[in-house]
Length: 467
Image (spheres, helix red, strand yellow):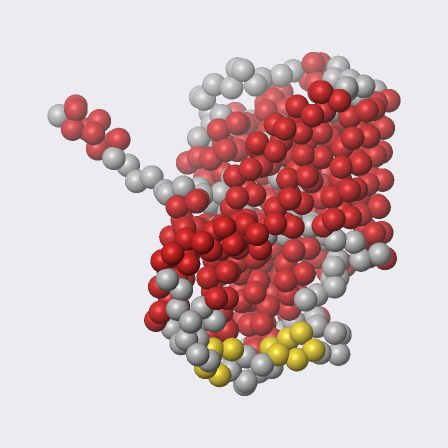
């Protein structure tokens, strides 16, 4: 009986690797090119100079089904198609990794804790959700924030909270940063580019969205933290051991935050300002932005006194860490290659537009939000999801009579927040680093996720009215 029980436990369902999922989608899309009629919309340049679909012009064209060998070749062609994005992600990730490894952010935490005393220390929850959110919103920090998880878990425990609070600070900071991104080049920047929208357009409302979600998430997290502080038995991880991460406030406050760390933060702030200026005023894109990121990383390294070999080793490590995500972009572009070669993208858009076009615009926007949230379960990569979904969602917005900005907003909402809940995304990694079991994390995050999803739905409705 015992052996049978152990055998059953070993046969628990295991989700396929993301490469398997994306390959399966490529094959499904290839099969679809044999089943669906090939078709196209006519397109025209609007007053803003953007090429958009002309509603009511869908027509069938000569069928061009994609065979098995062509579907396999689509992976290679997808790599070529997404080469500019892939290499930009490699370079930007490595540069941000250099800045993170300087320890400047760790010193910032220590400096703030020296100022905050007693019960006022609860303010670190919204402060650092905001700080990490700004980094995610502007330069796309996500995996780069993972080294902060043990730090914040230790801080949270030392302040009388628990590991869930520490994990929540990092997870919500990065997740909401992507959801409310104002200029994240990996997500909103790419999505706007695909949708034919000006880079960094719509920033004021996106900023409002980001701050609104931070307020909601911070209030929820602070309420839980204070409840645990008052009665540790109410902690979701009560009884679990976190001895290896426990810190005391005196140790935290001794963390160095000297002139070098402050200069690195200054370099980061200056780099963000240059990126904003270059993108807005000079029309910079991946080539120029890569140069800025590299300069930021190298200057930060030199400030810390690192030699060329140390810098090179850190960059190589970052390249290795981000390789899988970059390959995911290529696989996702392979999906697009198959759909384009089979001439069925417009057919799918037309099919989706039939029911959605009969609904009020704001309902169409809400439907896009749900679709993007579910899609992130299968493609947990902001860049990969952008290149997969936006070529369909952007023209669909035209057909539904809503702004493409709404389609981009629905994309970034769906991509960012679900990264911290879906098991195919970042959840297992973050929970593993924090030492928090996934089922206990879900008990905390699922109610908040639903509250934030409703909040996003309201924001989508408002966006439909103002854009």
